[in-house]
Amino acid sequence: MSSTTTSTGILETFSSAIEHVAESVSPSVVSVSSDGRNGTGIVWDDQGYIVTAYHVVHGLEEVEVGSDSGETFTGKVVGQDKSSDLALLKIEGKLRPITKGDSESLRVGQFVLALANPYATKASATSGIITGVKRNIGGWWGVGIDDAIVTDARVNPGYSGGPLVDASGRMVALNIAYMSSRG
Image (cartoon, rainbow, N blue to C red; front, side, top):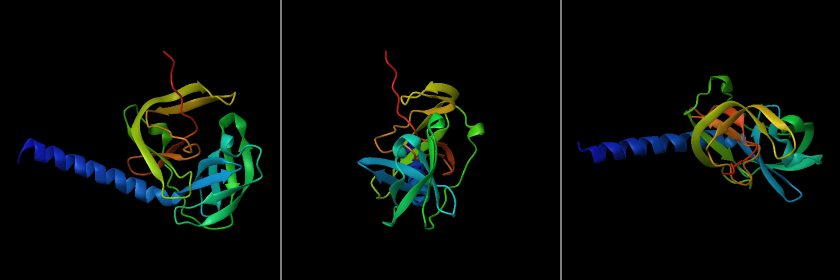
């Protein structure tokens, strides 16, 4: 067996594994939209609670929540915390909750996927590695985030409020911002 064949097989296996994780997490990733804003939410439990980013829903009482299966729901904003950029929504309906992981055990170099569903279609994903843990970062919304997890996975428009998942598809963080350094 040549090294090219072996390398191709490894890459195909790796690619299939990434596809599998994205597909398995997709039903737990929903769109959150209202007033021209498009973001993402995470199905937190089987009681209809959705977690998203505060900056996606601030100032709103209701939003439209769309699943990857095409169902839409009215989401009531039932909790908001600007300082952590977190918000909690409630829908009347049942969707599949995300599997939660352990963010405390994350290590620099660990592979992760950032998922989103800002337009109520199938979830989209980007990949990367953990580049920092337990960082204190100033947010563009005027507050700081303590113990932030930093990744080089690209967070595209609409990814705010979506999950960052490990290689097993377990949520380890909430995507809230894309930041670039100035040199």
